[in-house]
Image 1: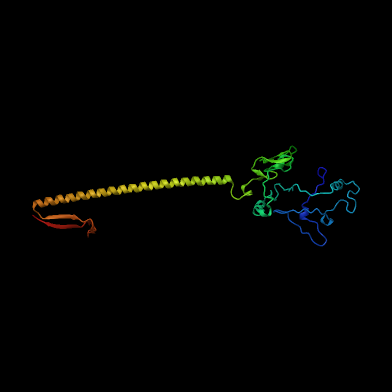
Image 2: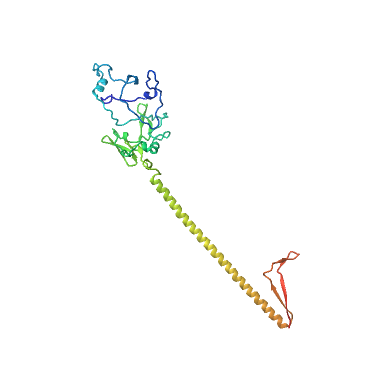
Length: 303
């Protein structure tokens, strides 16, 4: 009995140690850790481990059993499920997966991959923000920390310490503190993947900005490298041009010297010998290891 009303529950023994029939064995199950459907059968049978009050007699019997009286007063019954509460072991030694989306059985991912099995044209996937029944703010927030405190009698007692308040209880209804939290009790962080696929908008914007900065930096670096290359090519061209000019100047001076020597020798009446340095012919080596240019002796004549 809870507040004068009969409490109907499905204990853990109904799964781990189910009642057995006469001929067909009802196998035992492990605790459920994956998405499932629950079918509530309102029929009762003594073979299923449940039966109405005072079977084969009047409903209330002698009228002294308050539970039987409460059940009989509630007839005719109509089954309406308001919510399903799942109890989880939060103690330090527990190996139970906490939450409704354990890593071993990703419920949210399963639903996203099989949306056609969970929605139709008239019942689309809708993100819920609050509205669950509550009594205190602790019913509408995430229990993010659990610690043990020592009370005045030096005995240990478990105290839940909520670090982040994700919702509040307003007029016995949960109200999420921000749009970042969803679910009837504001315990599920909202994600873009809940209704679409892809990374969060903030993360995508940060990555996009990073790539934009890297792109601009690479363009500037390429332009700077090209500018340095052009300057190097321009400098090399200037050096080559100066070398050509010096070569032409030296060639002209050499030609003028040869012409002056020819004129001076011809005035004295001696054979004219013109020494011409053949720049086009290859350089030959002497036997002593010296290197000298090949000369052409041209006997022009005498006066």
